[in-house]
Image (cartoon, rainbow over all chains, first blue to last red; front, side, top):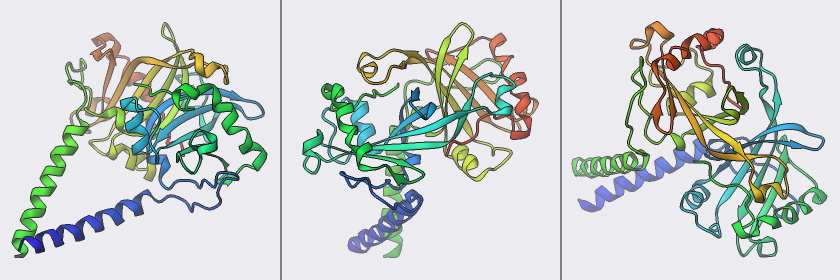
Length: 172
Length: 172
């Protein structure tokens, strides 16, 4: 009888997992980034928030950025685990600031508009040993940038070496 | 045998629910807002992201804001459900922009600092019928602002009446 109980449970667990996977899957994952071979992780828009920022990118204007992380990344951020464990993924979602008519009636500031680009850092200490254990990806409209763009990722993160190449801190 | 299977399952489900509740509970909920009686919802910092913004508050300087929602609110945002269903809660977390030394080595922009204040909108169409079905709360260091402050919440949201008094749109 106990065996049947566990069997039932196993079926329910599998069903639950399938349902979760179906829920988490977003748009087709499509192309992967050059050099690192990182694809857009399914369901990243639903990940928990690490921090937010406003910043200026040359040629891309004012950007509002939210960084979100998968469960492994969020746990590491909250517990201050360094280096980040393999499997951690950090996503930096950028939106172009555009005005919102409604919003400006009260608060005279631009509103996040359409998604501008999204960047990912994927931790795999063996696969990406040459770049601090991180694989990088930069997508615009679900299309990865070129090799030249991706060659700039790691050098730009080197100043944050003491924090495992991650600039961002968890915003409590 | 089937009954025992379901019994086992029920035990596991309850255990899982208790574990989830323990995980979701944050700091002590403490005081509630005047007028509306809204307390800080447990675990709100782990809710999914609606949108981000940079804005200026008189006397509080530059602020970076992330809005997050509980499951009911997120579902309504994604599906465009208006009015928001009872039980929806939207949290607006504000951080004061402060420089980060690391960060400024690469991107010369301020970084989110300590949490400045956090505001909540709680949907209960009966309890808060007089204010569009929304209860409001504004906390600084887990202490609610005074009655005068909370008297400003609803009038300020009236221009967004066509969107159920919510200015923010889901940032895809």
